[in-house]
Structure formats: structure tokens, C-alpha cells
Amino acid sequence: MNQASAVVPEKHSDESIGGVMGFFIVLAKYKKSIIGLPVAVGLLAIALSFVLPDVYQARTKMLPPQQAQSSASALLSQLGGFAGAAAGIASIKNPNDLYVGMLRSRTVAERLITRFNLKQVYEMDSLERTIKRLQDSTIITAGKDGLIVIEVEDNDRERAAKLANSYVEELLRLTKELAVTDASQRRVFFERQLETAKNNLAAAEVGLKGAIATHGVVSVDAESRTVVETVARLRAQTTAKEVQLNSMQAFITPNNPEYKRVEQELSSLRSQLAMLENGRRNDSTEHDGAASGGLENIKRLRDVKYYEMLYELLAKQYEVARLDEAKDPSIIQVLDPAVPPERKFKPKRLLFGILAFSVTLFASIFAAFARDAKHRMLSSSGGAARWSEFKSYLKK
Image 1 (cartoon, one colour):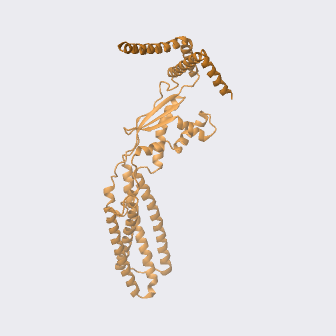
Image 2: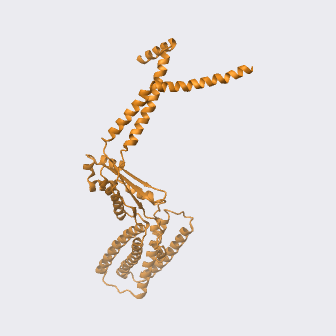
Image 3: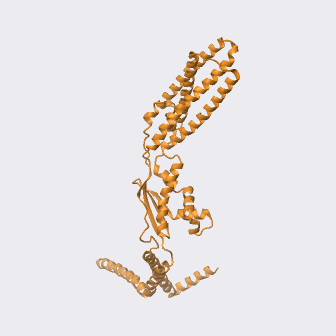
């Protein structure tokens, strides 16, 4: 019993040694092809890499604008009608994603293609293919450190650096054309509202002149003028609150305390306006109906006063937005401008040769063991028969 147990480990040890030796025997048997072929392929890959053109990579790092809270928030409370109108624009959670998207846009690509005549440089006859080639040669990433890195590859080291820097220049140009920051969005919003109010004021003035020309000049007492101005002011404030309330619906729920407060203010303004207009209507009914021309003039005057106050309100808000945009710290800053690279980025000839050598080496070892296994199988009668059967199935 003891002798049998002593023999078994020795037998397993001999099998292990035999398996390892068999591995090295196969390597030694085909050593010329295992070593010679990978070396030849590696040298050939290095030689072929010299045919490939040198590619240079230029890199620039930029600090994108940081979304900051508006400095005009306190001033907007003075004329609260449009204080929350621009605030309805949803803020971007990660500003870097916005600017990376702008840098990758077709607009920027087309401007760079035109600027550097890339269709001729890339020898492309299609704009779409040229854009694709430029995008494939450009890597734009936003790191966790808050920086945006632009890497551009090109066969010309000078052009690679100019392209990388031009991306930043085109982004600056694009941010001036588009309302990207909160301050610029408010400025654009009030600019449009101001233009609308200006047109409405001009139309109201024309209507007043027409009414005066039709009905003549009617004397308006101090009380009527006061009522007209009060109605105009209330109408302007009501319109402002309506715009503010509509803008708040885009980003808060009706249960929000701020929303309810503005809603109550709007309801109060509407009630005051209704009471004043109803009282004015009753007073007008008691007067002689022949004075309808004078009433028409007063209505026209009321419209003019309304649009004047609304225009004044929007003009103040527009100036606040412009000042806020001018003082906005959200500017693009270049941390590391791109410079012409001293060394080529690719092809990495040595790495190219090592990779080709490694792949061929593993393929040669596999082929060597496959050949040895085939030889062993053919050396036996049963193996030769199975090999013939295998070949017959391949021919079918």
C-alpha cells in the first residue's frame, strides 16, 4: 500500500516534466519560423511606417465661462413686472457640455474649413467628407478639473496649432452671436420685448393723432388725466405680472410660494384695474352721449400712456440686463494656447514594429503547435484516417 502511494506522485511528476519538455521541444523544433518570421514582419512594419506621413498633434486648454448668479437680481426687484421673466430660462447643469457641443458643431467646422481651405488641404470634393475628416482629427474633452482640452492632428505642425487656437476663436465668436449666458439671455429677451413695446407705442401715438384729427382737440381735466395715467400704470403692471407668471411656469410648480405670491399680486392688480375702469365707465355713461369723440380721445390717450409706461419699464430692465452682461465674469480664458509641436504624434514606428512582432510571434507559436499536432496525428494509423475524413468533409 505504501509502495503504491509512493509511486503515484513520481508518475505525475514525470508527466508534468514530460509536458513541459514537450512544449520546449516544439519551440526548439520550429525555432527558425517562430523567431525569424516575427522579426521579419516587425522590421517590415517599421519600414512601411516610414511611408506613412508624419502626423502632429497640437493641444490647447481653455477655461470655459462659469455660470454665476446675476448681479442684477437686486435691481430687478425695483420694477418687479419683468423681474422673473428672463429667469424662466432653464439653467444648464454642466456648462462645459454646452461649450463642448458648440465646439463640435457644424457651424464651427464649416468656418474652420473655409478659413483654412481644408477641402483642398484634405483633397476632398465633398463638404460632408471634409467635416468628417476634421472631426476625426479633433478630440474635444471636458475634464473633471473644469478645463476643456482641444487636440487637433494634422500633417503640418503649424496648421495643427493654428487649428487648435482657431477653435477657441470661433467659440468666442459664436458666444457673441448666440445668447449663451444668463445675462445675455436676459438682454435678448428684454431687447425683443422692448422692440415690441416700441412698435405698439408708435401705433398708439398714430391712433391718438388720428382721433384728434377726427374729433378735434378735447380738453382733459386734471382728474381725468390722473385716472388715465393710473389706469395706464395698472395695465402696465398687470401685463408685467402676467409675463412674470408665465415665465415662472416653465421652472416651478403652482404650489411654489413665490408663484403664489406673484399670482396674488396679479389678482390684486386686476381687481384694482377692474374697479377703476368700471368706475370710469359709469362716470362716462352719466355724461352727455354727444361727448363720445372726447371719450375716444381719452381712450387713445390712455393707450399711449400705457405703452409709454410699459416702454419705460422695459427700457430700464433692458439697461440693467446690458450692464449685467457687460459685468458678467463668464468669459472664455485660454490657459495653454496651442504651439507648434516639436515632435510628431504618429506614426510611432517602434511601437508599430513591436506590435507587429508580438502578433506574429503568437501566431507563429500557435502555427508551430498546430503543425506538430498534425504531424503526431498523421504518424498514427487512426489519426491519418481521421485527418482524411476531415479533409473529405472540407471538400464537400
